[in-house]
View (cartoon, rainbow, N blue to C red):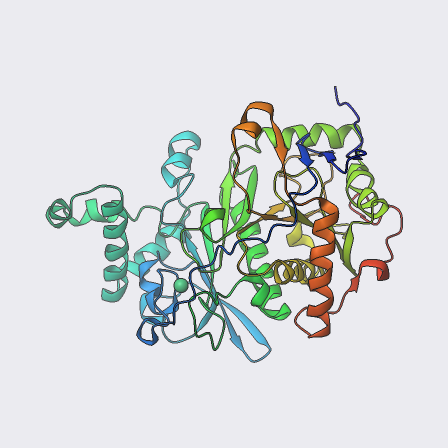
Length: 437
Ligand SMILES: [Zn+2]
């Protein structure tokens, strides 16, 4: 039974109690706790060591032989962006990758998982690609080197590694040309012209055009992973930014994980949507508009300060009639990307965030719009939350709206975000999401 609680209730003392209409998450914002400055999660402002530029971390361009071989890369020639696939190790330095898609070295769901539980076998193209890559000396050296780091990180003794026969070494590279867990890595570690180590290149420091290309390249990878095998039910897409948000490196990247179940939260949401197909208009966008929480709008998307989230959350909804991002037009993807980039820019690169994509899973009969949430990982879950399942959030949706809107106005004035309507300029008519059409 779904109990229809008012999503946002204001108490006489200023406490704001929220219930998420989709997940049921309960959040209280207690007055007087929200004005604390947000501590930076970026590294200290030490001067950048010139000699380490391009190789600060394993995702940096000069260390591209430390990740498994690329599935694809996006290169730029002026306004022309091209996707290159099937490159050999010898080709990697011939072009500059703005974004690279590589298999995750440590997969959440391994190729073995798909093989043993679902009888997965690599298609001929994958087998051929692996053989072609291993056939060149540089390719083989690259694969063995990355396989070695994976083996050592998994506890294999370096001396034992030296004694392993070739086929046992290559077994560690089982997923290097295959699998359902990919990473999309941006080129820059720091912003252009950075002088100190805290000047990281985040989603918000990309130009709107770069951010769109990053988004579209990720959408392409998402569609591709649905084709990885017929047992894929969902492709989770997320971006962990900075260590408190779970990132291993302070280098911009997204992850995509194909999974064979949709998860309990998505099933619960499915049931709520089945009972009320218009719920995303009614309880997300219409409600946000009624509450004065809308931040920005363009021809294909709406952004608002979210409610009923454990962490302060900005939400961007696609208004397109196509629920699947890969079926949307370039303009529709661009619209979502522009608002997401603006949310990141207004948040600031020093705030740890999780960007989470949501879309209608394969096999779900109920339509769901494509939507992206940006969660500020500025607090740690404590015993109170654990024992009561009531989360105390220090920034209310209204305080979040005010804080982000102020930044968006400045960013738009400075030309750092794409053209968009802000706050009272937004024309949010009733039921602006068209996913039911
Ligand atoms: Zn890096």
